Image (tube, rainbow, N blue to C red):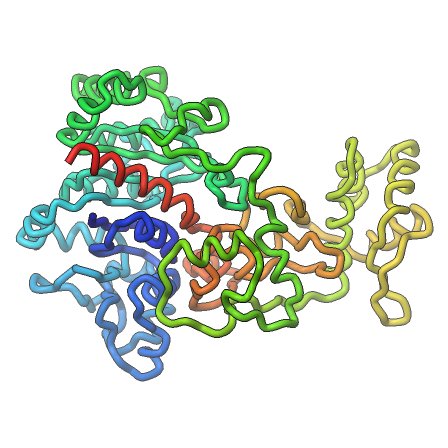
Length: 529
């Protein structure tokens, strides 16, 4: 079965769908930095090597660029928001899109298709099985879709328009939990997930919506994600004949009919007319019939230790597939190999920290173990808030069980603090404005905030440091052979358009989650076709 990947990122969704049995027809990604990782692992094209040799890419095509095709070095560092007026393009009416990555803005791609109807006709004739992607949706509404001051608000509409143009059998949209929270536009409350659902109905698709969490599918991360699966109307009609009494499908059909009947008054259709199914509230519905089947629960979630304990000693060069870690062996074998078979695991370089940062991270590691509200008290202590004497006494007793990191005579030493004054003196020497930082918990899945490396530190006392790109990739269920390319991190104004390795990993769809969803879609299509 074939799929097209929009908003492809570094390739997490495509990797998972490939393992589920889908074959990539082509992909589109805005960022050339994320595209470099996608091209290397999914398409087996080394853009960095080609750039050094002054050669052109054959499988990675720029929709528009300010640089000629031979100047890959500049193309790979180009601000993607500046390319719409670029003079150069790798696309023409004779371009074959098969097994290609199209780098650039999806709206520029839509413009290209509108100018080349023959390509669209040929694409539609392929009868693509699935179009997938994760456009930003948090403030999308059909009523406000023509606002030009926020291009991100238009991207879900571009996705829906693309699906309407190509008419695949199914659509898969992934997004953050925030899409389910209401937002206000022109003094009226909207729900982005509902507006997106309406947009796909208008293009001929019937949606099924759900709120998943990656931890229920073997991913060592507490990562809630909104998922919309939509079926072309003729495909849905076959599916509902196969499951005539299924309440999930009947609810979707009712919503579709309501939207079609009220095309001119879509604002009258509220969240009361449709629903998404939350895995936390209705786990019984996630049985593999219509919604993906749960494989892990509270008693067997994969935790942070399961994911990264074998990588703890960062001064070692780890050999690929040389571990007894069951989870790691599973993900390494679940996905087909990449461009080569490297001997050593890559992307495991440690960032250097000064004493202040390491001591602060050790503080976080310690207080993460505190119980009965003492963690908040310790956090207040760190941020300079006044602490009641009774709480100070309790904190002193708790800190006396742990070693903190001090510096004496220019040397770093770990020791138990003598008293609360010693702790307060240490805290004053390691100030921070960041209130989002925390240490991982060894026996729990990792939290979802993974795009900013400084927000999390390792759980182990001997490792008071941020996580490596490889460790974060483990939490996302990427196999160890999957190599992330381009810059490791970025900062300042460059954050506005650069997508370095940490961000690539944090933004990705966990491949294991994509695999499970892809297998569910495969099952449905095989049942009815």
